[in-house]
Image (cartoon, rainbow, N blue to C red):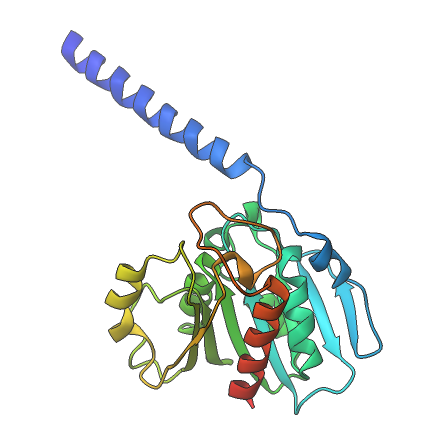
Length: 241
């Protein structure tokens, strides 16, 4: 009886320790946006920016045939850190929406795209994408909602088989990315949608897909984050159109 109580006590303590570690991780500060990203939250003559609370909307003055893009941020990165990228994509004529995630983790808000799709019925064609963990969860959502026609992976890969999903897909990586697990990425290649286009941004790194500073373990970029995001926005817009 004493042994059973001891085992139970150990199990309870272990579970409590795990919960404590998880709680600390969830409450740990995320990567904040830098000045470049904060500046991109301002409206311009070509793009109107609106903070809707659960999302940040970038509306181009000259929209291309009702094309929309939903973006899921990377893990523990503030949504605002991707404002420069979304603004650049809107400058290309794509209606762009960054979805805010609980605890800045897309795994807790993978269904966030649903509200966006419901809110803008005038958009005729939707693509979803995300950075790192955000890309994984965006792909999961794309496979479940027929209103999504394409998915963009930024330094990300699918965690389920999408090879027969019928989705259009674009995979963007950076040559100096030191965070993306290349072995897992390569192992996931058969799981990408069948007609995925693969493109690499030379000189970019993992953190360069956003504007939040350096990331531990990342490679050194020879391209500025702004230039990397502009390149990503251009390639996405060309692919969407």
